[in-house]
Image 1 (cartoon, rainbow, N blue to C red):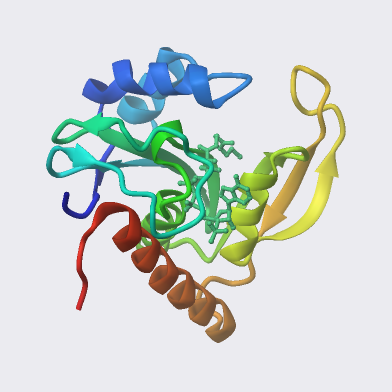
Image 2: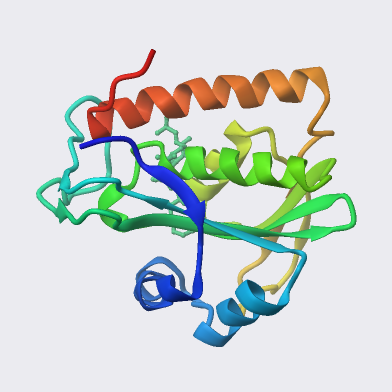
Length: 200
Ligand SMILES: CC(C)(COP(=O)(O)OP(=O)(O)OC[C@H]1O[C@@H](n2cnc3c(N)ncnc32)[C@H](O)[C@@H]1OP(=O)(O)O)[C@@H](O)C(=O)NCCC(=O)NCCS
């Protein structure tokens, strides 16, 4: 099928993003929230992962919770998206989501790495985020990237659930760089399993 490509998220993507917001989040963001960030917030960076060619997911080589391997993708299909706000030297992950049919293929990991690369290029020294306490898939993903639990905001979400606050060590610290390199290798391997791409 070919390897998913990282591109900027643009206002032209928002129809698809709105559909994904509804299926991925209990509190979906509005189109206006995205549009404001994409067009009027210099501190915001949003990226998308797209399929370069048409094809079909192949989950056979690894564990998966995605039960939609039959889905036929269209060229350029947006399969994951996310963004961060640069708050001085801290990249605050604002959101990230993977299309339900394409989960557990490494896209979330790969996209987070792309966001952290972009954040470092923009001068970020650390990264922070909030995550629902019950959101174990996301928590595992963030832990894999070196995010550590540093606090809890009680009743943070509209339904009363607590938010966990997570932060990375300094992104340029040798141990953190090694962790990100290991995560990158893992993401590539996982993507290869699902998308049939070959790497050197
Ligand atoms: C969280 C999310 C983005 C992960 O996307 P993904 O593309 O499936 O992630 P990956 O395939 O890159 O998974 C990377 C790692 O994350 C963790 N992870 C992902 N899904 C998981 C699950 N269902 N259960 C446990 N761990 C999971 C694992 O550590 C996984 O590595 P592994 O597969 O080797 O165990 C996706 O589940 C999603 O879109 N959820 C809904 C939106 C959301 O909650 N966003 C986060 C808001 S804070």
